[in-house]
Length: 273
Image (cartoon, rainbow, N blue to C red):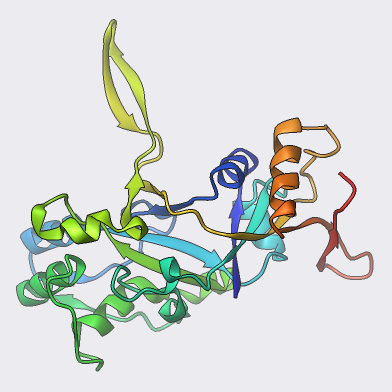
């Protein structure tokens, strides 16, 4: 199965080059109401927000031909859509993922699931993320089900995204979790840069807050160039070389245009670049 991710031009170039995927903590999503709950006191709410920092989410979609997605996430049609082969254990493994891709269909609803976070549930959630509890009864009161409520429910206003998620835990580098950390499915880096805070004094900060780049190479099956993506017209040698190398590996490359008789986007395979 192929699922898709929309990119700006610059981020798409990096994704094509690395063949890696970036995940983000829900605290930094564009929807501030992600994973929102009712907390009985401020201390529990603070602890809950800290736990969320130990979760990262990859957002994919079912279609590369969504005009709204191109406008919002594809740099106003200047970027790329990349289609990834998700029939890989990186996506499907239940041991290394909180929510594997086959269980990651986002549910869009006008009735918001209300979760009242107690100290007991907070501890259960924390243990579940850390992998200290491996099995849960699959009923509506289980921690497993509550994790799905937290990370797979969105308002119907977002339904145009047709989103499918992969949710992974971030676990600290302790001896107890050595096997988890050594697994290539879980190895990631944090893009960072030096920032001068006073003359001659620098500190390291995250380039994009909450972003984790996983080092496991993912197979790219399709690439779409946005309607305003001029990389081939402008003879962008780096991008053209990347696309040619991917095509040798069996990847199909398409350009996007509009159907003259409707509002639909259509694709055309590119073979002459």
